[in-house]
Length: 409
Image 1 (spheres, one colour):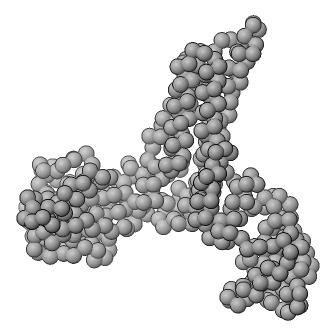
Image 2 (cartoon, helix red, strand yellow):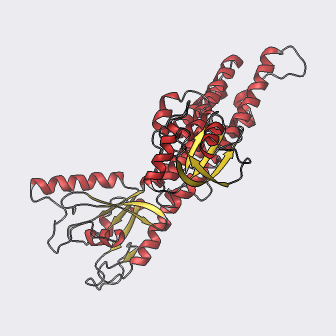
Image 3 (tube, one colour):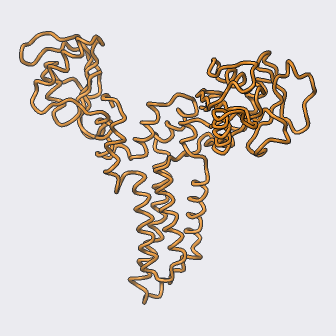
């Protein structure tokens, strides 16, 4: 599909198809070169006039056969027309943003949708692209504006009997706003959906860590051997489990190192434990470094015939598969506590930075004794929210964002 967007879209369509079809109706047409008259293709063409289009300007679409020669010939013919040029990566989406057809958070959602690899990523991206965050931000903006209007009335008409002095520290509306922003900032970030929860498999040497990683990853990502200390460095294996992304991390066995190389591996293993979202501990339950974040596993159930040890969560065997389905179920249950909930708006780092600025300004407004200072704080809070939707102060990052899109977007 070849798309032309801009004031010359109709002229370009008429030059190749010889006529303008009815708006928003697909019709068959022969496409001819506007200068030589050569037949280029038999295609379907559509015309979208006016501003109610995807980009907010007139659009023409040419649905041609997909051979490279056909596409190249059509693009070459369009290139001979005055005022037309090739689109830059992401240009159609950028025009939609600049023409008010979508806000910046929706464009970010579309970008996430193009790279989504799991069900949870797809659902979160669809919600963002559908304007879920933009609607929440607009509601916050409206409520802050209402408070600002009350303050301005108090400043300008303080001598009027029906205008009360404002005490923002006790304003129920402002208190509710502060609580809502705190709750939003306390939710899991979209980065965990995109990058995957970091699951570190740790324990003493020869506990079966690499075998467990290979089973969960569904491939031989790590070397396995009966020799203790085979794994000496971090081995990472991205995978999807239960519709969510995970980054599985195999680590060196935790013990007193026998040489300098093993010592480096052990140190890296300990550092990985600190960065883990979930730890799968394959050692003695009493030695588990962080029980709250850990799933304590009794490994090699095919060789260790003891019943489930006290404080262990389950017995597993990567060799026979015993307990592995239960481990996956437990892993998915743990992950749900750390990932955005279904239908919940997930925010990225840029959103959260702006929300923190907004929250800081609202808290300052609560403490302000001077209405002029409070009014300025609320203005700053609104400006911070504007940066989320792209109404202000985002020019420096637009090229980076839209440059990630393909030419067709």
